[in-house]
Structure formats: C-alpha cells, structure tokens
Length: 213
Image 1 (cartoon, one colour):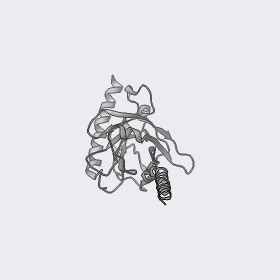
Image 2 (cartoon, one colour):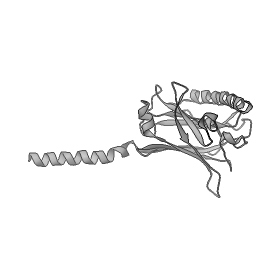
Image 3 (cartoon, one colour):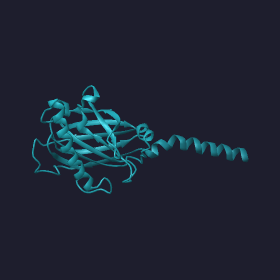
Image 4 (tube, one colour):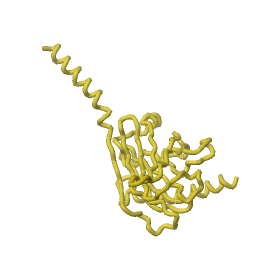
C-alpha cells in the first residue's frame, strides 16, 4: 500500500513538472481599428495591435501596424518606428521594465536591428534584443517583433506572471502618434502612457545629437 502511494505521488510530481511551464504560458492582445491620437503631427505611425506571448521560455511581442511599410530609427526615414513598450510583468507597480524601440540604431549597439530592455528603476539596459521589421504583404499587415528570454527577467530579479500586463506608445521622430491599450489599464496606467510620450520626445532629442556628432 505504501509503495503504491509513493508511486502515485511520484507520478503526480512528474506530471506537475511537465505541466508547470505551461501554467506560466499565455497570450494577451490589445487592438484597435484607428489611432488613439488621430490629431498627432505626422508622419503617423499607427498601431493595429500588440500581442504578448509567454511560452514558458520566452516572452515574445508582435506589433502590427496600419502603415504599409515600417523601419527602425536607424533608417532615418519617415516610416521609422520610435517608442516604448511598458512591461508590468507581475501586475505590480513596484517592478517592471520597458523596451526602448527608439534605441534601434544606437551607436553603442555596433549595428542596426537591436533594441534595449531597461528596468524601470534605472536607465542602464539589462539586455539588447534583436528586432524584426516586416512590411505589409497582401492582407498581412506590417509587423515589428522580438523576444525576451525569461532568464533575463529572473537574472535581474524581475518576476514574470504569465504575460503580465503591458502598454505601447509609438510615434515618429518628434511626436507620439498612437498607443495601446486605448483605455487605462491597472498598471501601466494612462499616466504612465503620458510619461512614455514625454520620454519619446526626450529620446528623439538625443538621437539628433547622435546624427550631428
């Protein structure tokens, strides 16, 4: 009898070990059909959606756009995507990070196609991520995508619960032109979105200094 109980317990533990990564997995999407900032000075960068997926190993983000073409800021073109993605990874205002989409093209990266992951309690990047820009093809919209190993969060003592929550603000070199979600979420809040918009303008001024050096 005792042996049977121990075998059953071992089987339960084994199943939980297999299933446990899946319990962290999940997908969250925010979308809208028109810009949340329709009066923003152009050129407009307009979001269709942002999706975050936690597969138990990586946290992956895909942004879709109404724009037929998108590029990184290193292109210096009008369809370049500037902005930030706020990550509230554990539904707590005390922790988190953000993706600096405007950092693509930073000379410190040594090449294009890379963006910074930064903690909310500092300005030093904790990781540099490869970002992919794909232009519209037929009915498939333009996309921006990247992934973050969950180990990056654990190494930096940032808890991750499922996908957590997130928000994104995008724009051109001078102005924020769209954001998602369009209504306030518990954290990041609408106040955080306004702050991100201000940071977008601040980063743009730094980018001009890179170009003129």
